[in-house]
Image (cartoon, rainbow, N blue to C red; front, side, top):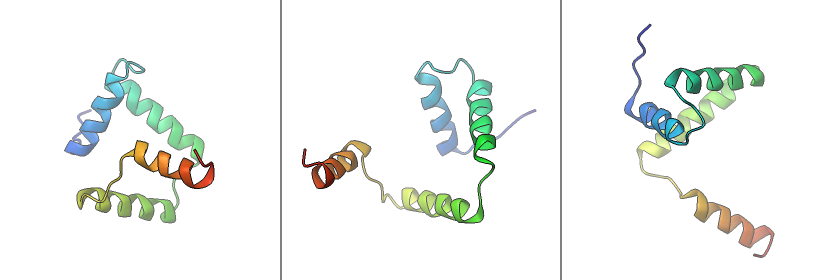
Length: 79
């Protein structure tokens, strides 16, 4: 089977492979499908949230996770 991936999805796949946790694209996809299966599938609200997030990313409305984490710590933990 041949699967076509968007550049964004290919980047995510490549990033997962670079961690060394997975030895092949098949392992990444299998893990993702198993995780999705464990969740019982995604409801419409979750799918809509994913679509909105992708649109925000395309518009460049993203935040570095380290910055967000630090702001949360500052606000709620006082660190």
